[in-house]
Length: 334
Image 1: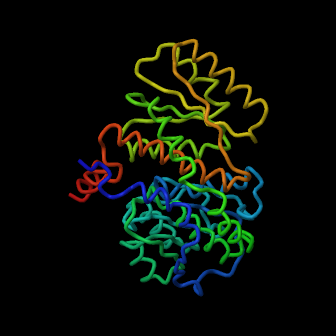
Image 2 (image 1 turned 90 degrees about the horizontal axis):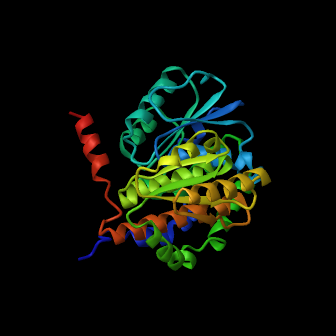
Image 3 (image 1 turned 120 degrees about the vertical axis):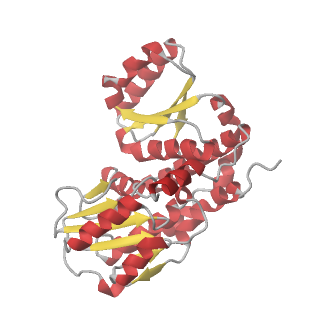
């Protein structure tokens, strides 16, 4: 019986090429020609992670993709305190029907705050057009969690249009498919995922790489349909690690390690892994590949997708559908 009914594997193989797909920018002439002192990304799940990626570029000093103002992230309804006339709000929803993001959009519109958006259609596309909001349309017909390339390309277009990123941003995206080839490490991950069979993955990484650990968590949750959790160094050393004194389930620890991590973070990871192995916990280090932060992000995205994909096949699970999410949305409408 075929398990991968929607050919999820082909989506992983082509995921990096999303960065070079042409995208349509609607109502670009309507964007506000003024300065901003911050960008607020409003979104849920994989859409909110676009904000994490931008912060990651800023924290790691990757100039081509570092906006010239701070980036904040809002994962809920309405808007946070501090959103004002000096804020550029970017509402991101792949489906265009994310109710939390629509609520944030409505709040920004009512407060006369500059707002832009990214979606593939749905209610948000209608709202953007009705209100003449600048927005970028991304392709439909894939799962939202697999649209990171489209979403990053779209947010770069928006930020360049507002003068918050330079032309080097587009050049950085365009060159990436030559640097990250998903097929080159498919077999490696296929073999590794056997270690995770019947285990709950726990991903640990540095604070700088939180977005990557979170993306892996999402992949295990939605692709493999299993629980997964993540945390960061050094915070986990001050609390969570003590909880492993009594492990109450079948876990496997994944230490996502970066050659650019601070020396003290590297040492913390090594000592923590040693201590937790003494408690009988299986643990592996996975070294992030890539010559710069953009390459590292997409290498990690693909690696996590391969792990969760092949683990899903081991369980006889189709990685594409997210039935529980769809059921929740249906019940919320009742």
